[in-house]
Image 1 (cartoon, helix red, strand yellow):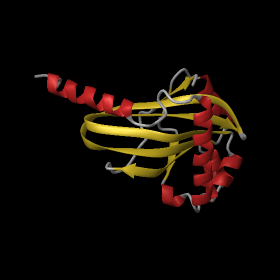
Image 2: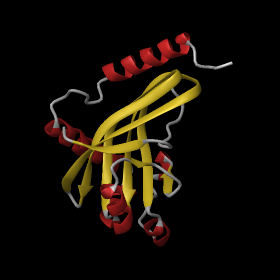
Image 3: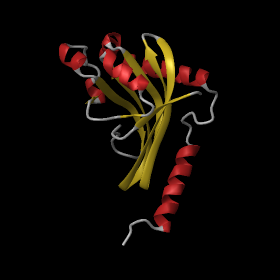
Image 4: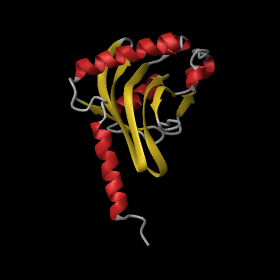
Length: 185
């Protein structure tokens, strides 16, 4: 017997509608608003976790997602928009989207940054029509950000992800299965 029912479909549709209604930049002022949010997010990141400034300086590029909204009620999803920086320049804009199913209930918002530690990782990300977080990503727990340094071990890791500034009624945030797609804001 199939677990796909009209009730589950309605719950999923409700979750998607609620997610679309959240203030994460959908239908917003475009590039200027994303740029302002990215700068604010970086200011918070560097002041709260000073070691990340060194990591950013050693990276080939960073994808900054200022606000990702995640909602789950049996079926769930997340969405956010951000910018890819090379040096201090914004070179592209991206959306991040993920879907999930299973035992879940709640909503949250969080920020995350992907540090591309090698030129190859950055080029692979930029050339991909839809890059999905995979096994080559190493996570940094937000409270470790203060002591995080761009050491030999971190520089050899292709992509480092840091999730921080979580707020909401869900526990934990993961980027597994998140798809990043280049957008025109």
